[in-house]
Length: 178
Image 1 (cartoon, one colour):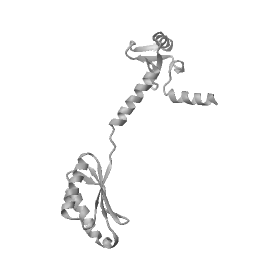
Image 2 (cartoon, helix red, strand yellow):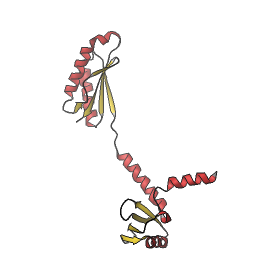
Image 3 (cartoon, rainbow, N blue to C red):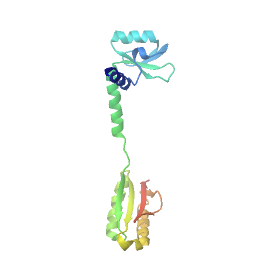
Image 4 (spheres, rainbow, N blue to C red):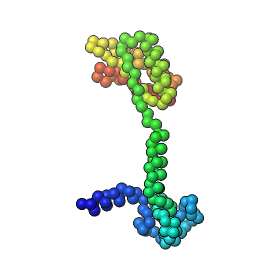
C-alpha cells in the first residue's frame, strides 16, 4: 500500500524531467552558475553532479531542450511563488447590483448613478434591476423608462450589454465599463 502512495507523490512533485529522466543527446544549458551553451547530456549531468545540484528540463519542446542546473526543491518553491504572485495580481471583474423600484425618486436615482460611475471606473460591471412587487407589475413602462434613463446617464462611462428585459418580476440590464 505504501508503494502506491509514494508513486503518486513522485508524479505530483516531478512536473519537470530531472537528472536521468532526461532522454536526449544534447541540451542547452542556461543559468547563473554555468556557461550558457549546448552540451551533451553526459557533460551536463557531470556538471550538475560536480555542483551537487539537479539538472532540470525547463523547456522540453525547444530544439535542443533547455535545461538548468538548480536545486530542484528550491526551483519548485520559486515556481509556486511566481504562480501565487501572478494569481494575486490578476483582477477578476465583479458584478455590482443596483436595485430600483418603479417609483424610485429622482434623488435616489442620482445617488445610485454616482455609485454606478464609481463602480464602472473601478472596472466592475453593473447589473441594474427594477423590482416589481405585487400590483406594481402594471408599471412596466415606468421601470423600462427608468432603466433607459439610467443607461443614458452612464453613457460616458459604460455601455449596456443588452436592452432591458424582463426576468420574472424583475426588469434587468447589465452595463459594462468602456
